[in-house]
Each structure stands twice: as C-alpha cells, then as structure tokens.
Amino acid sequence: MKRFAFLTPVRLLLVLSLMLGASAASAQDAGARYWSDSWRGWHFYEDPMPEEQERPPLPDKGVPAAPPALPSKAPELVEFERLQKTLEDTRNIAIMRPTEANVRRYMELESQVVARASYFADVAQRVAWATPALDPTLQGRPVNAKALEVFEQTELVDRSRSIAELGKDHVLFFFYRSDCPYCHAFAPTLAAFQARHGIQVVAISVDGGPMPGFPQARTDNGIATALKVAQVPAVFLAQPFTGKITPIGFGVLSESQLLERIAAVSGPQAEAMLPGTTQRLALPQEAP
Image (cartoon, rainbow, N blue to C red):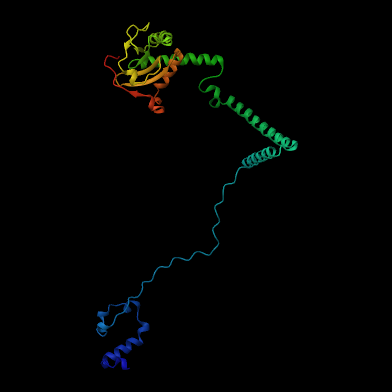
C-alpha cells in the first residue's frame, strides 16, 4: 500500500474499487479521455484501444467449383483434323525417308483426300445450279459467249448514258504532241467518242503543234507540268468548276476501255479507293 500512501482515504477506496472492477469495464470506458476523470490528474496517460480490423473472409474450403465445360467439337471436325494430321505426317515421313512403301502410303492417302474434295465440288456445283443466288455464273460478268454478248451490249448502253450525264459538268483533257504517232492514231477514237457519248474532249498540245480532228486545240499553259504528264497521249477526266482532275489512262485506248475507266473513276467510291490519284487545280475560266 506504500504506493498509494499519498492518496486520501476516499481516493484510496476509489482506486481500489476501480482496480477490482477493471475486468468488468467496457472498452469505451477504458478509452475515455484522461481529463474527464479528476482522480487521475495529469500524470496518467492511457493509449487508445486499437481499432478492431476487419479480417478478410477465410477461403471456402468446400468442394472447388468445376471449370466450365468446353463445347465439344462436331465429330466431322474431329475426323477432319485426324485426317489432316495423318496426311501431313505421312507426307513428312515420305519426304524424310522416301522408300517405296512410304511414298505409296502417302499417295494412297492423298488419293482418298482428293476423292473427298472432288465429291464436295460436285455437290457444291449441283447446289449452285439449283440456287440462282449461289450460282457464280449468274453474278457479274457471265462466262457463256451468248450471255456475254448481251451483257456487254447492255453495259455499253448503261455506261454511254451515264457518261452523257457526266458530260454536263465534266470534260476530257487530251494531252498530245504534234510529232507523236500514237497521239495521231488515238485522236480519231477520241473524236468519235466525243460525238457518240456527248462528253467534250479538250485537246491540249504539249509542244504547241496542231492535231487533226481538233481544230480548237489549246497550247499547254502549264497544266501538263502540274499534272506531271510525262507521257502522251494522256487522258484526264476534269470537272472545271471544282478543279477536280482524275487520270483515265496513258497510251492508245479503245472506246470500250475509255467507257470502262471513266465509269470506274466517276463512281461514288472511286476517290476513296485511290485518293492520291485525284488532284484539284485552279482551271482557267475559259475551260468548259
């Protein structure tokens, strides 16, 4: 009791009662601030009670969940993969050890594979015959000679109509040299093309010389250099009011080639396919 000799009897009884009842005190009372108890004075200090941390839940020691079942392959796929692997292995063995038995084994197996592929091709052909939407001979350009003749005639009429419509705000630039024999050979085709399809051909002389069939030919004013025309004859499709110019071709072209190329470069997706081929220049005002 010597350690409590400095306490008064009342305070001593209070300390003893607190010591005996300490085991029953709550965590909240034990963590009270020291100045709320006048009997302690400022010599006493108590560390706050550590907060109880949440413990992560223990892993479930039950039966582990079964992995999701993978979809099983169709038996045909299993058979195909087995056949493919067998053929490859047999071929590799025959290459590395080309004995008569190994080569014969590979050739027999290859013959079976070719027979299967041939049977598939026959079935596919019959399905196409019975289904017009799947018949490649009915899609696009036909292969039959008579059908091809009708197709080309119909296509010629359609393209001529579209080029006549295109000629309302487009022209063809024809670059030539007066001493170029190919230009002289190509000029009548362009003159006939202009008369038949209704699109104007503007002849431009690179060397300043004339060209039969184009009495109003113009002398190059630098546009050939701007378009990098290094070879003649050269044909460009131009839209004067926008300055958009697209190359059609170089050298001597036939009427059917002109029709096909002009239709191709004037399509809605033409510039998106090859944006670098189309240029925009400030064309002279006198150009139609």
